[in-house]
Amino acid sequence: MRRPMVAGNWKMHGSEAANTALLTELDLRLRVEWPIDVAVFPPFVYLADIARRLRDSTIEVGAQNVCAEAGGAFTGEVAAAMLKDVGCALVIVGHSERRRWYHEDDALVARKFAAALGAGLTPVLCIGETLEEREADKTEAVVARQLDAVLATNGTAPFAHAIVAYEPVWAIGTGRNASPAQAQAVHAFVRRRIAEQNANIAGQTRILYGGSVKAANAAELFAMPDIDGGLVGGASLGAEEFNEICAAAAVRH
Ligand code: 13P
Image 1 (cartoon, helix red, strand yellow):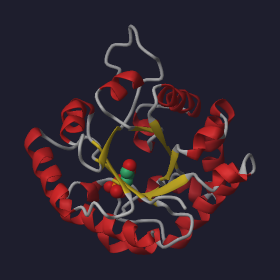
Image 2 (cartoon, rainbow, N blue to C red):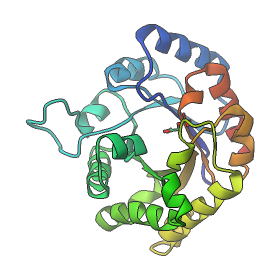
Image 3 (cartoon, helix red, strand yellow):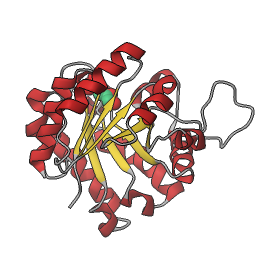
Image 4 (tube, rainbow, N blue to C red):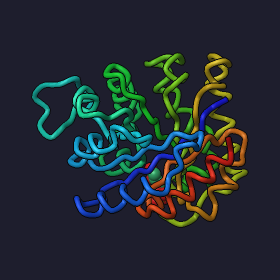
């Protein structure tokens, strides 16, 4: 069965002091026996230090973005091999905030996905529709397009371990989560889409839900058959809340 995952995307939040307090508190609360994977995604500048500190813990570390190029004259960018070098295991690609504010298109996201794989990182591919697209009944068309761009260039095999995060843009940071039924419908669609290429691999792909996940709604979301955990933004910044979300994922197992 797919092992549940709870991933905390800190976005552009944190400081030396706040990170230490959060991780110390989280470490005290998380139960190592929980059959789930837990990961945190701090801003770049904190990654090396946090990865070192969490080396012996069960919490994995990932980056929020990566350069599609392997290295060279790309001022301000960070290569996948560098993330691996400092102890990252995962990297988010195609987050809607990157697509929206930094104009990342499907082709670039597919190249970032490939760069992550090439360096031995697990990509967390974010897909999801805007409110306008949902209201125009384009949700499936949008997530299919976003997914197909990656499948076309990377194939299906990586999805045995690569992670998909369905994050409807209208649910991110709004306090308005997709209902469990709405999320489940899209997760099932995504799994079917991968299954059209390879049913065995589709059965292994972990599909996380993201968008206003909190302790109060995590259990009902994670109870859905195709929701394998959560990619959590705001609620990952408080140890107590994040821990409760992890507890809800452990129950799913
Ligand atoms: P919120 O949980 O703050 O809505 O953010 C979700 C998200 O974008 C995680 O990547």
